Length: 243
Ligand code: CIR
View 1 (spheres, protein in one colour):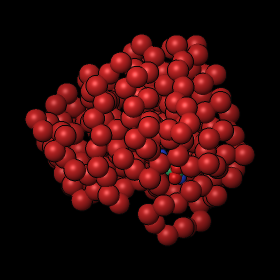
View 2 (cartoon, helix red, strand yellow; view 1 turned 180 degrees about the vertical axis):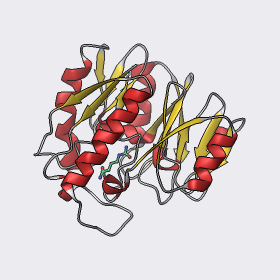
View 3 (cartoon, rainbow, N blue to C red; view 1 turned 30 degrees about the vertical axis):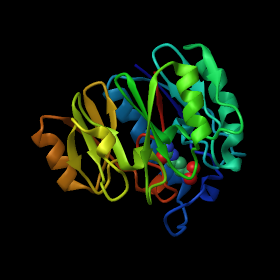
């Protein structure tokens, strides 16, 4: 497996904040935590590509929002925030080595953080960043079945629900309507943003009850310090694109 990541820009302090109070970011600490995250990806079996920082885009470390990578195609998104639109250019260039590229077009807006792929189904969160036009385009461009999911109070769908095993998801019911996920084994969590890489779940330190619930199910967990980028709504899924 290959993970595309991007170095934390020096402008990261100006990253967007949606459902929390703005707090200053310690750039060196954010970069050290990002290095630790890349080491976790390697330990889980990834070859890690690190693209150079793009200082003109404060949120550009969150590469997940710029693309959906499937087995047969990569869909380049059209991020919902104006300040993030230009982040896709360099990601599209990096992805052409691996997949045919297709593109979400206006009036659609879509953040990759709103896209959860579970086997043959693509779930898309109806957040403030993603609209119905995007759902139709994802359906058309990928030929997959796409399910819309209601969200409340979470930035992205994957802020509220992620996959942690073959039949298991981690979710916070306060933020997401789980009826589209009937049949899945649900672990309820205050922090549901986890990244499944091969058989390892990369997960932020500081949520011992969820860590214990994962381990009880026999899931291998690799903890990372991720609180610095969390100040601008960044989680562990956001910082990589898995191929
Ligand atoms: C933003 O608001 O766009 C960034 N500050 C955080 C993006 C996090 N991305 C993600 O959850 N996929």
